[in-house]
Amino acid sequence: MVNLTIDNKNVIVEENSTILEAAKKLHIHIPTLCYHPDQTIKANCRICLVETDNKKLVPACSTKVKEGMNILTNSKFVREAQRGVLELILANHNQDCLKCIRNGNCELQTLCERFNISHNSLEGDAVESHPMDDFNPSIVRDYSKCIKCGRCVEVCSSIQNVNVLACANRSTSYEILPRFDKKLHETECVFCGQCIKVCPVGAIYEKDSINNVLNALDDPNMHVIVQIAPAVRVSIGEEFNLNPGEITTGKIVSSLKRIGFNKVFDTNFTADLTIIEEGHELINRIENGGVLPMITSCSPGWINYVETFAPDLIDHLSTCKSPQQMFGALSKTYYSQKTGIHPSKIFTVSIMPCTAKKFEANRKEMNSYGYVDVDSVLTTREFSKLIKSKGIDFRYIEDEQFDNPFGITTGAGAIFGATGGVMEAALRSVYELLTKESLSNIDFKDVRGTKGHKEAIVNINGTPIKVAVAHGLKNASVILDEIRRGKSDYAFVEIMACPGGCIGGGGQPINIDPKINEKRIDAIYEVDKNMEIRKSHENPAIKELYEDFLGEPLGELSHKLLHTHYHSRF
Image (cartoon, rainbow, N blue to C red; front, side, top):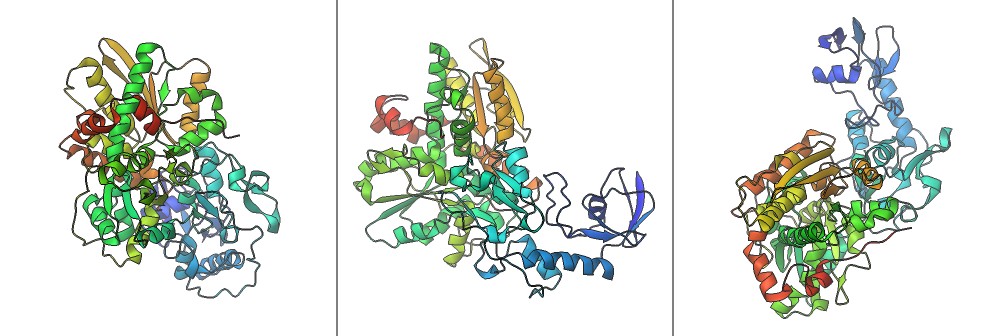
């Protein structure tokens, strides 16, 4: 343990702690920009400078504590140094804050408020050195806003193993670019949006689809329906100052109805449907010598990764569409038939925690009988803007219920929102379908939690079935390498592109508190626990769907509507 003084307050911390960590114990807030609690120390922005007892300035994020240290974080010397650093950053930053997507939730803007900077006295060149990169359906890069902190580079390489973003050039020409100065759509980008989640400013953000949705809502000839992903209901409350993980399902439904959607449905319905199709596909592969392990196909960022970095393993993917796309397919066929509304007059909207869902909805494979499955995708952040633009007081709006037929769901569909949820939902159904016995305990806790790689063994009819779960693409790549080497003995693998699964998706509310994802996950399992039905194959609306329309799992019609194929992207 090390004893030191910070701003005349004594503190004892563990050896090898940084000054920044020691200050947090005293609730002293040292300003930071390049620092992120989930990343390595960079110490390149220098906004966290503090004064040592020998009158030197050192970065608090990277300087280790020493016995007897006397640190000042708010002296005139420190304030002037920090302000100077901030003004240098601002001199090369587009300061059109009013129109910026991060206005009100920008770490740089917060620092300007702290240092009372309303006008920068330094002249700089914030002219765009590159045109805006908005040539893909998911992500926009605004180079004029980049502060070169390096957070996006690290998450792209160390967490996602994609390595699209990199540092380029030196001195005043230093910048963060896609490799070889390409546009994102020309690179191996999987559009997971994790770079957006760690960017402190508005240099990277999702492509806006709000106007497309508003135009459809204003068109009297369009029947506009919407689906809500499971992870959205435990995260959107954060945009309205509710507690992280607060379950807001009823408020979401009520808000959407007030906004003007004709019907409000639950993606959990097609999550249940995915389990039926995917479960039967797994059983078929096990019984008939199919390609194993079978790997889930719910996460579009993960699908993009396989198609880009592991096209040799595409046959391991389940052919099932994601719940989003299954819903879209049914909306233009089954729902169209039930309502008598022509599919050309149905506008299907998804509200998702994911930026890659925008890319997925634009895939040429995603159409049913010639009509696009999903017409527009909004992220959780876009949805919150839509609510605010309509003047809805989300905190106090009364709860309402989903519409039928796609509003009857189970707890198994809800847990799709957390890493391990698809696996657990599948095991609940596959076990009972194969054994014809009821599970005494349907909670498969071995596949839960935030550990990057999880395993479980389930005994089915005397045969041990080994399964695995991974989240974050770097963890996924380890499993892919095992499969290539013939070292994998799994029958079924769940992979989600984003850390934590959908609750940590690239379209979720932005925060830098690592505990928030855990609170969202806890809430997902709370939703499951409180559901009357917790197994997908027991959903009465799913049974009716097969009886009245699809026929049977893996049948001709379900194969046409609910399954697809994947291919190499390059």
